[in-house]
Length: 443
Image: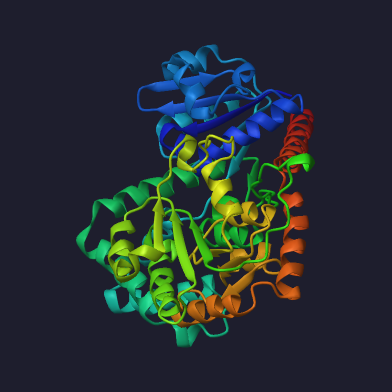
């Protein structure tokens, strides 16, 4: 088997790059060498399989052979599988997929539902409607997205109205963001029509994809295969966390942006810190809301620490002097990890926290309920009071038997998300696609 991974250059510096980096390494260890093609407006950079164990993807990219698109397509070796790993946001990526499909390769793509699909799908559905009708239809649309939420009607308030109003604004004013989203939506639709198999990270992601791309996904097998984490060797397994004593440290690890719920987290922390002098918070990450959060927490600046991302993929993976990454160090030295996201596709930070035996408090979004509900504490998404109350409940009994049992269950579950297991699922899927293609050619 000879797979080719394809992603656009901008995706190398995102979560997609991290996923490709990890999968390529583990597939190499499992004797399935993967070439990686990184597309850009001026051509294609090709990282051969024998380099997949060297450094990180970003570093390997610097040493990759750069070719024009025509040269790559004309002289590319035969591949059994082409796996597109990012939003198909450039013509080169689609050209590679189309050409290698004609040469007999099976095509696999991974879907990430985000604002591009949401705006694109809404724009396609509502372009003929007047503004009042758009608001009515948007409420119906969003209710379908959150159909498991029994309290939707009561909660169709500020958060959802702001979302709808933002959509109305891009329709009325024709902002560049809408044009970009529509282009991305169009590219993704074309990629799906070329795909023999589509990977979704979760069942919820599959439902949303089918809602946004019903026609394009019809008849394509699409089982969920999640992302993975690197397992800490048994001889380096984190010890049971010491019982919290003295100051309790809360940890937020992720992009500091509105959709991650960081504003609500800051407001909830202000409510908590006014009642408790034994709690502090660390924000590990970067983002456009960092200054907003700093200003909100200014009265308690001695209790709030901001640690920026550095290193490969901006994930805090750079090593400290003792050989442990900043992310690992923060997780191993915090008492509660808080993940207040409004929406996510998977959220590996939770899985990594569970594997490092830190209790996790997460919003009750559908993705988290599907993957993590038996292993984390939950609060009502977007509700500052619910978040503050949940933090206070933890502060009152951080060492309870129930809390320790949850941490132990979470730690055991985290091994099911090991990258080696995820890589083996990909290998099985690739073999299936190859077998199906052989059957089709014989018919």
